[in-house]
Amino acid sequence: MNFFRRLFGRSKAREASQPEGIEAGEKMMLRVDTDNFGKEVQQAIWEEISKQTNLPIYEGRVEHGYSRAAVSQGSQCPRCYAKTQQRYANFIYATDIAPRVMFAPAGFFCTGCPTVIIDEEMIEAGVKKGYTFQGVVGIDYERKKEPITFEHGMEMTLYTCLMKIKMSSDLLP
Ligand SMILES: [Zn+2]
Image 1 (cartoon, rainbow, N blue to C red):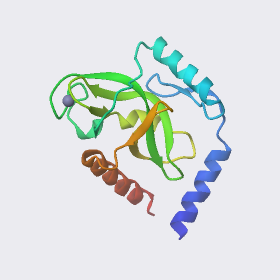
Image 2 (tube, helix red, strand yellow):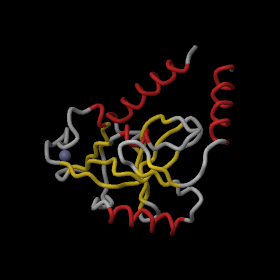
Image 3 (spheres, rainbow, N blue to C red):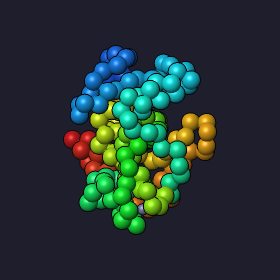
Image 4 (cartoon, rainbow, N blue to C red):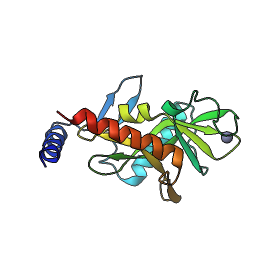
């Protein structure tokens, strides 16, 4: 009871002091808060960012998701050992309040099979203030295709669960 009240109260306070706009985050990452833009403007911003950084947007399907922290390297697929390519995608991630979507070059997509290695640290670094990151749960394709979730992808779920447990214990007094 106290735990939830504390969590909720703290989140609200942080959200209230959050300035909207553009800021340069860590690791040379440009963070753009597109919450206040319409879908079409968002899309245009994302396409421009993709062009400027020479990293295409991934539009294929994936069936297996791994956290970068759970595999030894991001450049090689843990399933078929083919090379991966870094791409932008809209990553759906869980937070303490509601699921959110982040457009980021955080996916290392296998060139040989439908697998992605996700750099969750990159997503976590860009999470909107006031929200507590709880792990990547899927990929959104705008309205072009149905979003996919990793709920049934055992590898990702296992890691996400471990992370949740760790985060919960961090919050205990
Ligand atoms: Zn593969």
